[in-house]
Image (cartoon, rainbow, N blue to C red; front, side, top):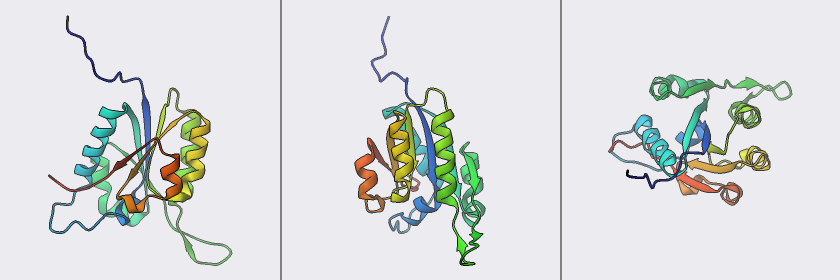
Length: 171
């Protein structure tokens, strides 16, 4: 009988991605095929092979990016969570709700997902450090998914166990 010598798939990962952050921090790509599907396929396969099973992927996005990329992301089997801009009661200006929604959702998910071992954050934004710290206190390992090394805050780099780069280029 032949034995599998690969890494046992005992890890359980949840991915929370800030689409606007991933999209805004992409390096210039020139005349190549742009595809979020190809980028997500590649990085999800890498994470699954190197770390373990991906339980679920939630993509948080403002409505205008859902309109542009929603079908492509939906076809990946990911859950899209639209986060509208709202008017601030104090200033009357529009306020982005993606970060706040992702953080609140993430805190609930890390407490309620049974057997979870890893939180994968799809953003290099330091605003997510409190969520990452909460996940660490809950005993989770931290994976960061970023569009470029330049988009990673030094605070998140210090908190991460592993960093993956996202590139939406068709090969």
